Amino acid sequence: MTSVTRSRRQVRLSRALGLALTPKAVKHFEKRPYPPGEHGRARRRTESDYAVRLREKQRLRAQYALREKQLARAYAAARKASGLTGEALVEDLETRLDALVLRSGFARTILQARQAVTHRHILVDGKIVDRPSFRVKVGQTIQVKPKSQATVPFQIAAAGAHRDVLPAVPGYLDVQLEKLSALLTRRPKRAEVPVTCDVQLVVEYYAR
Image 1 (cartoon, rainbow, N blue to C red):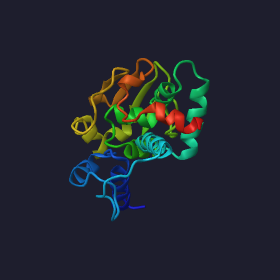
Image 2 (tube, rainbow, N blue to C red):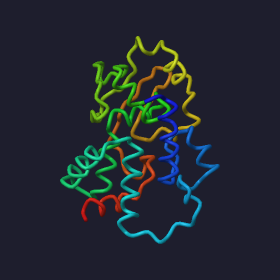
Image 3 (tube, one colour):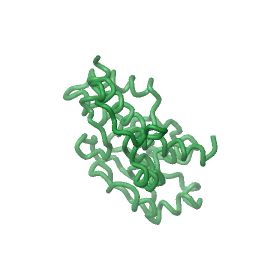
């Protein structure tokens, strides 16, 4: 899939879900803030409870760019965790390596962050980790591989070029952007995770 095709898909998905998934999708979404298709402008009919819950689940899934099976597995694990299932789900997903690469400002989108990981540019405690789903533990350091730091994309990131389109660095990360290094200082809390989603509706979707 070409980058142009991928970008168009993200724009369409953004419009369908009602939130901009990438910086490029923001301007398109502002121009046409309604679902794609010939009936997109039409006023939405009253949606069923199932449709509302499904859309929230799809929103969460899209923001982490997960496959359905991945999200379902994460939900199953969250059910066994202490506390509220929805909050536990988001807090767990937020410890994914690709999510933290994005939050740290080393990439501009979740798909770019995933690519950085799979292309073996990212170290965790000094060792290459090429699994985007790797769960980073409190106290572990994420860093762009020294050899990769010299490349243009990461030089741009180190200069802070992505900060204008990303949310502020959350409190659970200690980021040294110029060194392309970040420390997970504590477990994320749902309230501070920059994800747009009603997690209770996601829980209700899976619990149906």
